[in-house]
Amino acid sequence: MCHLIGTGQTSGHLCVLVERCTEAAYLIKALCLKHKLNLIRVGANPKVLGAWAGLCKIDKVGSPRKVVK
Image 1 (cartoon, one colour):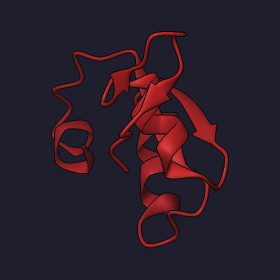
Image 2: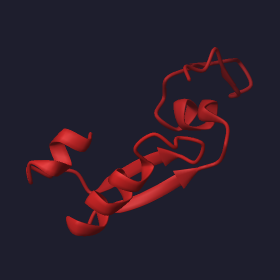
Image 3: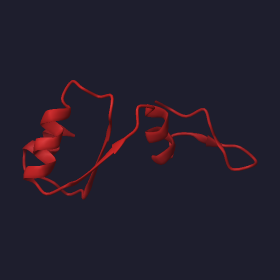
Image 4: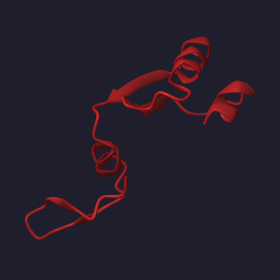
């Protein structure tokens, strides 16, 4: 993601970042601001992001199961 934003080849409109990601969060925020990309910060649970991205199985009642972190 950082490489794509840093090269100026931004074809996306949104960047989603887990709040507990601290390694390169400052760099990702700065690059999103520079290239005018929307940034959404997801709470401390990375499984929420996995469910949003569809990286899970949906059970009979519609609840996500086996969510990828």
